[in-house]
Image 1 (cartoon, helix red, strand yellow):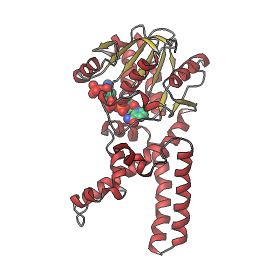
Image 2 (tube, helix red, strand yellow; image 1 turned 90 degrees about the vertical axis):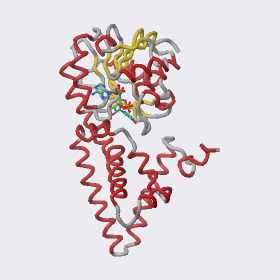
Image 3 (cartoon, helix red, strand yellow; image 1 turned 45 degrees about the vertical axis):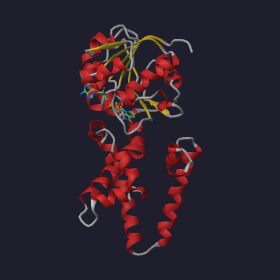
Image 4 (cartoon, protein in one colour; image 1 turned 60 degrees about the vertical axis):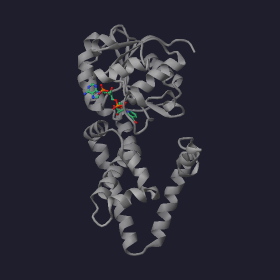
Length: 306
Ligand code: NAP
């Protein structure tokens, strides 16, 4: 594959940042990858794993002369980082991010982006519950969607270049506005995380069922909630602080559905329960048919062991 960029700067070298670096290396997308992480430890691991060609102590040094700059830090940290690097961005460069919320990124970063820089927010719908520079792997983006949320007046050529970049990392790309992104992700990602956190917290607080029983019998469903609930607390705190309206809207709808189920359980309304469960099963089948998960029983866990 032909080199796409002379220099790419990746700011934040956790799960997503390090995965992008590995993907760029695998596909030869940048002649030079420069990286910055906040902590000395992460910068040290980046050197050890050879994630980037240059490790910088400051974001300002990392972005010098970069043609593409990717913010890979928690949503709540992007505004301050954009403010810091804004005056040092190369004219004509593309600035993007990977944050799980888009409206807040536009709100917090736009004021600091020079007119000569193409700011195109993005969000790869890919990841795991792991975090940190050792958790990255290039294949995390393979076959997964990446959503770009260009603003009105965004340069079409820059959007096309960034689309190509994500496709070269193995993703499929969709374009939508930031507000719509936040509504879609509120139901597909943010609400499930909130429910998982609540379920795990409820189990942890139970008095009639012991913690050891919760662990012992977790394979009956609870375990799958704990995987989601093991996600990085900083990242998820920032998601809920920054996608408040859409999450509250989805939570309202969820509560109504829950009330319907609660009533059906109370009154022994098997038909309502059966119909709802049947609809839900169809959704799962649709996800498998779209190649977004494995059809193997137990998410392929059995196969992974053998
Ligand atoms: P991560 O593994 O925890 O890595 C976060 C990185 O950001 C680390 O390099 C960390 O630096 C740095 N950082 C943390 N707080 C910072 C601050 N206040 N200022 C500057 N740098 C800071 O997280 P991640 O999973 O890669 O997530 C990064 C972004 O990707 C988030 O915006 C998240 O919403 C988005 N995202 C995540 C997933 C997922 O599944 N995890 C999927 C899609 C998008 P140190 O290592 O030096 O502490």
